[in-house]
Length: 376
Image (cartoon, rainbow, N blue to C red; front, side, top):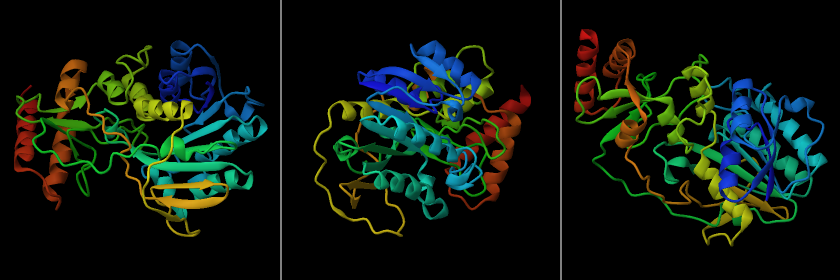
């Protein structure tokens, strides 16, 4: 299975496909720091600006985790006509010129609702107009053995194959609630309307905030000593939270640049699951489905095969892989730094002044952390 990766970032999709047995023929990435990672980690040609790429090789799979900048809730929300997310048209141009057997697209769930789901409508209409079959599904990385809650929409399309056999062949159902975690993730940049609370997981790693600043989440480690209870994961821990090996982006760039690269990446185990489905598609699971009505809100999972559009009742948990490490252990093994005094003080002030529900012992540890950081 030979692949071309467009908007490759640091190669999450491509690395996952290689773990499923694929070989990478060409990578396209505009941002120099990420392109340097690709040249170091892959045995493939790396090209830059997709707008200057005239054509791509004839391969089995073309992937495109196209920019979410104009589609994300923390982005500019300009939509599919934005200057960055709109570059998906360049990927479609190359796909139309040299059609592969499979196409894999990835982006944020906000594309299903922003502007009435205009981005998803544009993409699936493009495939429908050219006689392609397509299927998409929203999945969460935390169900693939990672300690990160990360919801993403994955779309698979083919002119000759049934993509439902890739995305809809696994269904683990809704998870059971487990209590008593040793660590909880949260966004220290929030505190007014939400905190991104994660039971045993971090919230989604982001490439940047609304101000364009890369800001890793924080983690509360229950029962840890003052100064160690409220921390920020190291970049190496962030790489592991995405399924890369620790040090994947360590080529001398500053931590802020590395965090942006990691936050923009595709979770590797999710891509591996996709790759295995591409190698050996199976029958989709037997779940409720119904006609997909045009003009309604896009559901979490849908397909179009031979022109018949259907909505599928599938969860965001196709697999139920338990992480090998707890979140607390991952930070112990790969590093974490105390959250700064100013960051902790600002978050605590916002949280206490809000109406958000919070555990009293969490607030106690925040205040103990403030006291400790004030004395060092």
